[in-house]
Length: 254
Picture 1 (cartoon, rainbow, N blue to C red):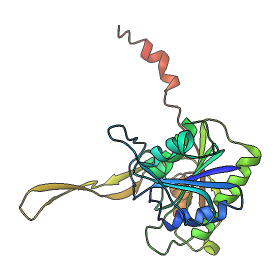
Picture 2: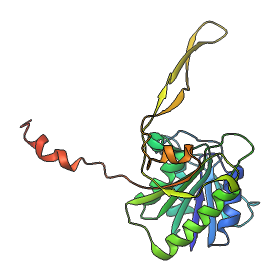
Picture 3: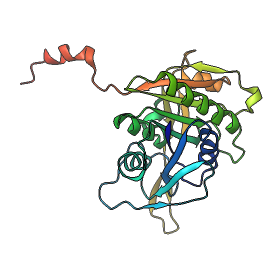
């Protein structure tokens, strides 16, 4: 299996490099990742300046590796279309420092890289840990689960419009309770925008805030990770509200 690994934490991320080493036991791993952190970029693509890709060495387990001065979605798009010698059969994005739970999937560069894989007809996985520290608690378990999932996808396949979003709690591997198959919960942010002043008294704004989980149902991804489980969520992006089509037509807007 040909596997493309990317992320939004940048090509120097420990999470990416550990992931590559383990996935190299599953297939032929290539890397196309941002040259610096691109967290929170969502599905942005670069259209108003040229992109530059530099081939690099020194990532154990990778047969090819490129750093790109673009977004995670750019990395997948260029990797599939231009940079790699063999078309990937799987995109794996991560391992991300910090969770991508609930509606965070809409902001996440990690998940958006996996979505770009779907758009290009390649099955995809996103992998994240609820740990922003340098300890990377559970990283060994995250790469193990990613490798097992990649192997299973190679054998069983995925629906063409579905990716798997994997999130692990901030716990040592031996303290995790196991795997739960979950649905996407609802996460919002309190006090999202903070207004500050620079040394000259001019206002500026810092996007911050505290995550608030609005959906604590027993099968939500947010609840599972909070309770110490590994969450695996099949995510699809069918944007049309099918049930509302007939009612909307009845509005006679013409």
